Length: 211
Ligand SMILES: Cc1cc2nc3c(=O)[nH]c(=O)nc-3n(C[C@H](O)[C@H](O)[C@H](O)COP(=O)(O)O)c2cc1C
Image 1 (spheres, helix red, strand yellow):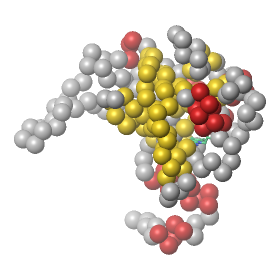
Image 2 (cartoon, protein in one colour):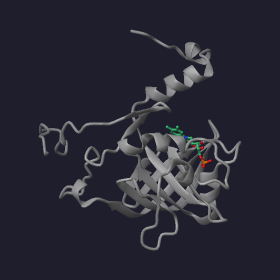
Image 3 (cartoon, protein in one colour):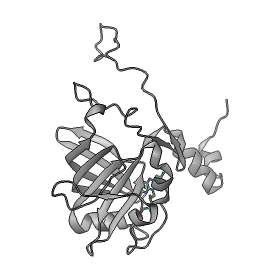
Image 4 (cartoon, protein in one colour):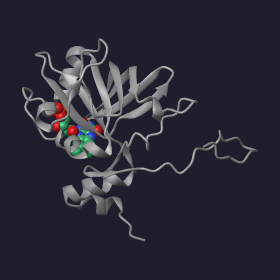
């Protein structure tokens, strides 16, 4: 079996190290974060670090890279305290990936990538119309991570939009049906397949299929 020690990792060329470390922890979620600047310019950027934090209260978090350069998503969230989270599906991976390009604050990634802005109810921040699952979030807090100078951004989920057909009776969302992709590393997109759903695990009981 191939082995990388800390010493081997430290001397890898930076891109190779980034690919290795970034894919070594497994598949990540694929989301587009929608925001709006003070001047009303919409912004859309791909993030692979959006993760569930808790259901009650309904919270999510995502990791923001160091603020050494301008981060439009961060500035916009701080400006109006709202953002949207939009699942990337298999039909929009190229446009979604393109949003990671360093566009100026005055340029909307919606316009540049052809993804469509969608405004739902009275939420003033755009969702991505092409996305099958969309969340409207309120910024709650940010935590500075001293070890790498990243920020953990916390949002409260205040709106969820999805097609009725992808939700089962017990609330679970079938992400395979939504064609939601996952990310490995920084440039690879996969389409996961549901293998089964399993009953609540208890010490003296074998788990059963509940699909
Ligand atoms: C697949 C992929 C995943 C990414 N995930 C993150 C992430 O989790 N956090 C982050 O800060 N940047 C991430 N980025 C980089 C941002 O998309 C990129 O910096 C973008 O330009 C940010 O746009 P903004 O300046 O409009 O906020 C990712 C890029 C790619 C290609």
